[in-house]
Image (cartoon, rainbow, N blue to C red; front, side, top):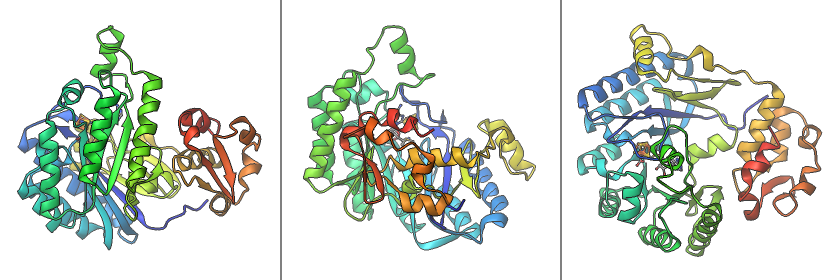
Length: 383
Ligand SMILES: C[S@@+](CC[C@H](N)C(=O)[O-])C[C@H]1O[C@@H](n2cnc3c(N)ncnc32)[C@H](O)[C@@H]1O
Ligand code: SF4
């Protein structure tokens, strides 16, 4: 099998946050000790040195510094991470380079350093423009912090900014959500990620719902909020290109599109996962084991995570990730990738089963907006 895009995406994980939000199960820890964050930055640099021998011949056209909260890194640490990135990898001149930021952790100094070091896309976790909702979520910033830092990033020179917002939150009504969308589109970010709140085991929200301290999100309201947001965004020029993502023309996320287009990526940092040369694997998610491996100059890959799926399983992954895109799956590309016809592998009767929700048109198989509401059910059919 061959993957579709020959350029590589790099993901760098920064697993620290000012405070853990009540809904979040991402691999991140509360940490405000700059010495510890700096020590981790050093380990990440050493991992880049280790990996470059194997991968420096590949062109890198996207880099995503995600977390956690990468904007917790000092200007100095982000500077040396970026220098090491360019020394060790063949980063294209026009590569898309994103950093995730929490509004509580930005400063003029950091924003200037990002731009100077070639970071050209900022992704800000706003979540809501309603202080009451921010409080429910356990966020460390206010509505004003989000507004102010967005404008500050613009003033510093960022033209490509994504804003993350969330809906389906207990205590958030339709009006509050509508206000958040209005404020978001007023700022006119180039990209908007809109996430339906997921209740994940191990989070404070999960326990609160289990103990009857909070009501579970209401499915019907969640769907109403989703379609309302899409309508409002599309009316002012945003293109809905993936289940949870809208962008102004020309601003789709190159890096995230790799995850949905069966393209290769290399992850570095704690717990970071990779898909490369037909193999899927992740780094240790224990800080102790990760740092120990790096100190011994060994790749910090968790042997237990290495997965070499069968061709049939990979076809399933291709299908369910590809269906996240509004453009859907290109059946010609599928044939070129796996040397088999899509409907020789998957039962064509699925089109009847999900009539009006899953559509085949000119070699493209895609979900309709109605199909997006039951996307998990449809995608599960391909696994
Ligand atoms: C790594 S965070 C972004 C940057 C930064 N950590 C922040 O929160 O400001 C990625 C995004 O995932 C979304 N997210 C996290 N947990 C979620 C959950 N349980 N349900 C839905 N969206 C979630 C949030 O919108 C968050 O901004
Ligand atoms: S949502 Fe962002 S800031 Fe909050 S805990 Fe998760 S990664 Fe950290």
